[in-house]
Image (cartoon, rainbow over all chains, first blue to last red; front, top):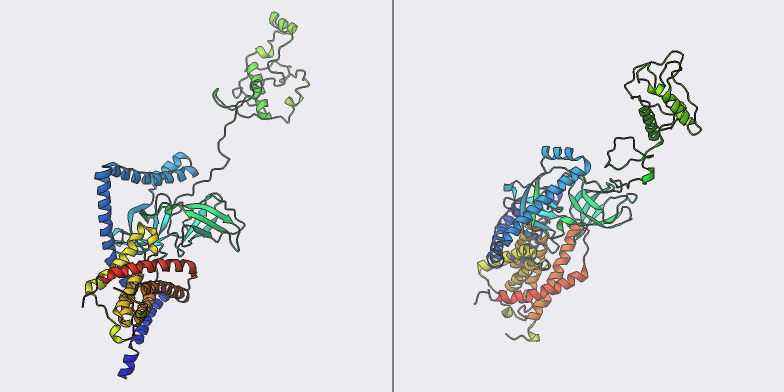
Length: 411
Length: 177
């Protein structure tokens, strides 16, 4: 028996060790649970060393840069960069608010609602493996970081927290094949699932071929995954073509474009609106009208001398005409008492009376002692026997002006 | 040290010289290899393809010429590597356990001080490691990974060149008998 054991000792130990690890693996896969103790020990052993090395490297580098090469230019650069990052986030927040609501409302919303609560973290290591698309950051559960939190930069999303340990957290990058997030396109609001591909680009899955996605279009987080707050930039479409059964959409993750050094972990996410896509339906310049047609096309609305003339319709022209007639006849719209004589809207505005009539009317008073209609006080009652609306001869050019189908003059 | 082509195979038990290392070497070297893998690619991304933990495992297994020792070194280094990866624990562990065992078995039969042998073994074990990992990923985790043969061969060659240099350096840490 001893000889047998000695003979097969090596292979027995090999099989036992492999079997033990297979059970460990099966336990994790079947229960979808992690053996936290082993990972915790490894991370706790490695991350302080990595942090120490990083501190020494950063200190040495900083010393050289600060005091030997550039003195304080580096610190100023760092300050400006952090300020720029903060302003970028603030700017994006304001832009999205202003894009969907008026300025006052957006400012009100902005005051009432603070943006997402975030914590800055520094990448201190990458995960092991040749195709590692996970990194370690120097913030862990002691800083309030939890598994599943979103990791972003001012430019866009970076990944999500895969595991949180006391001194560090493991972040799965958006380029990892195991990464997924809900996204929505900016222009046509097409929804899809962002997935990593193991290299620089990501793809957007589950977009029907009938839906319109264009190259160059931006994708934003949709907030459906309950990880990333809605409205964060994801990336720009580089390829969009029909596929089977869904469209093949590839995009460049903007948050990973310049490498990952410092990131923000979203502790409390605040959803934002997707910025509206700027279309042609924006305020546009209209040139002033031709000088000769300016009087005819006088806008009815109260437009000042410096305002651009508005386009006029037939109804506007008629209203203008009635106003002119009313002004000529001393009729004040809206002030006449009920039953008072209205203005004669059948006469031509600015119509010059015949020379003889005009002279006669001015030289001798009327035989019946009555004053002409246009010389009477506006509120005076018409004399008995006189038609309240004396019709003057209608010119051929004006038959429609007095027709019942025309809009009523303003009272 | 001179090597002759006839001295590649070990003919007698006397030829099998077991190298011994101090305790701190056995702890610090694998730890440094893992640290290298998690830290250096932050600045030099192309170095992420350097499998230093594998090279170190192969070295200790070859030099100690003990299959049980080799598989234990492989299991520990692999599990430590798993702990710092996004994979479930055991993927690198099983892979490196097998590599450690096979490397130690090969070390019992070949003269592993020969640079050419080291180069070939470095190349072979890298490709073997990648293949086992690929099989495990597909069989145990159901991941649809592609085995990129051409890329693996090129990386295997690069790792083998690094392995020869690193083995030469690690030889200096052996205990003198």
